[in-house]
Image (tube, rainbow, N blue to C red):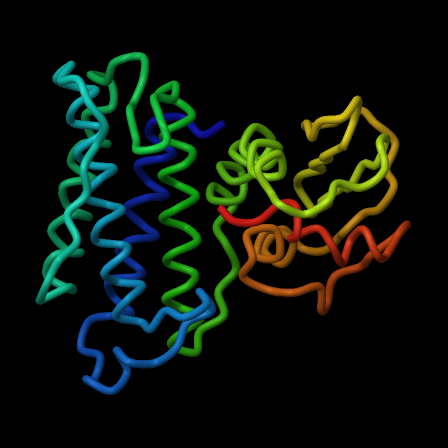
Length: 244
C-alpha cells in the first residue's frame, strides 16, 4: 500500500494532469466521447467533481470525527471551476492525513483509512487516464497508481463478482491478472469468489501493468494482452468482475 505521503503525491499529480488537459478546451470538445460508456468529457468531469468533493468531505469528517458518509456535490454549471475547487479541497485534506481517524466513511460504507487512500489514488489515476485518453493522449499509469490499484482489487473484486448476475464458472476456477509488477488471482472456490494468491491458475491475462489494469477496470479489451489457459474464461472475466 502507498504511504500517506505517496497517496498525496499521486492524487495531486493525477488530478493536476486532468485539469491541465481540460483547461482551455473548445466547447465542442466537452461533448466528445470517453471510454466510460455513454459519458462525454463533460459527464466525466462532472462525475470527477462529485467524486473529489465526496472524498474531501469524507476525509474532513474522519479528521474532525464528524459522523456520516462523505457527501459529494455535483455541479450544475462551470464544471471545470467546481472540479478545480474540489481537487484543491481533497489535496488540502490529504496534506493533513496524520490527523485522520481510523476509518473513512464513503457511500459504500466505512473503510480503514489506509485503504481509503488507496481507493482515492486509484480513482484519481484512472479518471485522469480517462480524460487523457478522451483527448487523444496515451500515458502509462504511474507506478504509484498501479500499486494502489493492485491493493484495492483483491478485496473489492470478489464482492463485485459475488453480486454479479452471471453464472459462476466451475468450482476451483482461478483467473489471474499478471502485470509486470503484480500477480493477482481470483478464484471461485468452495462456492464463493475470493482472492486466491496461492492457487494454481486456470487462465491468465498478462501484459504491461497499464494494459492489464485498464482491462481489469473495463477501460479496454483483451487486444494486446497475452491469454494463457482457458481462453473462454479470460474472455468472460468482465462478466463476473464488473466495475469498479
